[in-house]
Length: 392
Image (cartoon, rainbow, N blue to C red):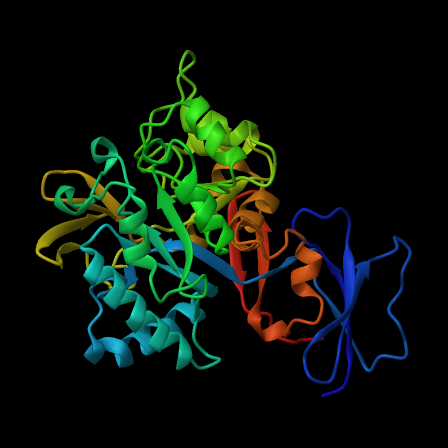
């Protein structure tokens, strides 16, 4: 394949237009700002103008509980082949990597799920969405804010319980852990987790602004599904959301952009209160990717899916079936800010995991075929994505 010079593209969060050289292996080289009077370089056999479309890495989802009928927390050895197929489907949905999420369950089941996910990671093919270390959403949560998490399996945050859960596993197996910081007032568990390279997120918590702020100062780096399963942002009791917005960087706020978990107006307000800190998550459950809404089993419980929202039989919201890139499109429509929506789905989740916050860093040397091309139609408020296809 001959080299191609590409110009007139945008990068989310970066000013002006950019250009790059696509080498013979389809990799991005010499990504740089484009001069206003720059003309196509004659030495290149082909010149590809992007017409002002955006280029970004593919999405990373830090909170996804399952897909296509499979639950990460209820995996069986006989389902691993189906999971590989489901992850190939997810890659075609523009998702590069996920933190498979395990909600509160008996410690033995969590450990078994971690072992099975490790096995899947070791056998993945390039055509699949990559499994990163898991996101343990519990079991160390405030019982009063447990949401859809089973009450009987919520655990106190004691050293013995944490060590029992983590024995034999590392940050490669557990990338992220959600905890209620008030269960760890001296930050002993939080400090130990950070020392192991595990990102600590605050969630399912009754923490005040002061308690959450102290946990962020001690090393927590994320807020799990902001506004949900935590005290609200009140003008006399600002709570964890305010603590995350005001914390020294880097602290990120996870946002489910389905329009139900958080009202669209509040979602837009969050992007303005915490510029550069909002990271989209899907919080997708196993029915994600299945065509029909209706009633689905979840272990020994049942959920009902209506218009992309999953609820337990008592009406408690349990998650969504809206993919992370669909969430990005919705956030762009609400905010009229495509840069923010693209960054929130692609770059910031990587930054939350400590993988760098520069879109340029993530694109230099990357294979174009694994990236996303975005087009914004302002009149319709529509942000759409596709896999870049080489054309003159």
